[in-house]
Image (cartoon, rainbow, N blue to C red):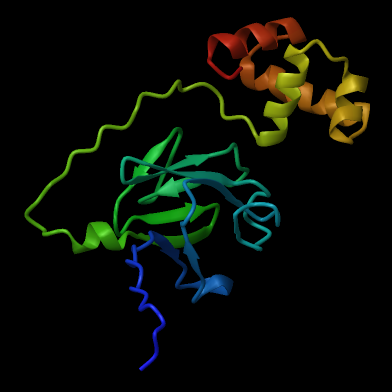
Length: 194
């Protein structure tokens, strides 16, 4: 017999997933194993769906108090839960159909599925301001505006042209319902975006 210590197997914790059963993604499973992460077409997302109908940064997943919460990030095709477009953070439940534009999968939560059917748990979702949803890049531009940087300085900081920064600024003005930088910063601060 060997004198090597015996290691116990670590406990396996079931992870919520999204299963795609149809279309080009048939058979694909996304394991929602991070506490907070984005999903989209771009390769720097934690969860990548390489389908041209999915936005580059489409939605965000967040785990909180044992629940998985999904938020659309201003995607072109929208995010749906149970066939309904969502407009703010939405708690997913086992068996929900989740759509990213026309791409649809099923949310499965093994922990919820294993609970007895006769037990009902009420989850309170924290209140979130229902202000506009900004893309990660729009948020960066907004924060640099708040620091007093010019479009040229923001462009240098982010590695984009001044013209691109002006386009992001106009998108921000439109989303926030303002006409200028000062208005954007003031409205964003009021909405808790800064």
